[in-house]
Amino acid sequence: MRLVIRPRKFNLHEGLRESLEMRVRFALSRFSPRIRDVLVTLEDVNGPRGGVDKRCQVVVSLTPRGRVSIDETEDSFETAIAHAAERAGRAVGRELERRQTTRASGPGMSPRSD
Image 1 (cartoon, rainbow, N blue to C red):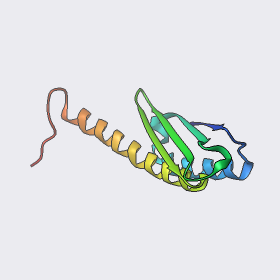
Image 2 (image 1 turned 135 degrees about the vertical axis):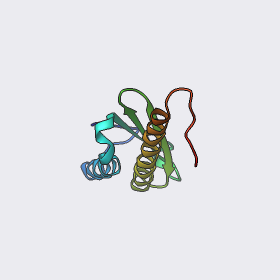
Image 3 (image 1 turned 180 degrees about the vertical axis):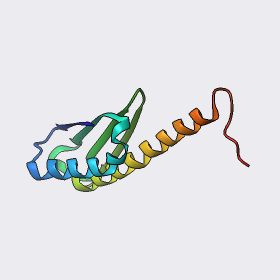
Image 4 (image 1 turned 90 degrees about the horizontal axis):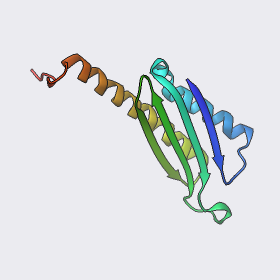
């Protein structure tokens, strides 16, 4: 699983980068064989004016194809990263489960509910 971090409109310090990597890898590690790339974009939307403007976008590219995208905006990067990583883990799990259910039921068939 390749992880790419792109900060926009601010300088990303090493402590925040390490925290981000740890949270994202922890949230997605159980799915790593099915993940090709993870792109995390951090942006300070309002710049130095402050407010609820710290944006974290996580885009997970799945193998062989497909994508899950999460966007979270909070008052701090730490909170935005934590929420986005958690949501990304749940969303990837749901997507992979959906694929498994679709494949198990076969083309043109709906899942049984006995």
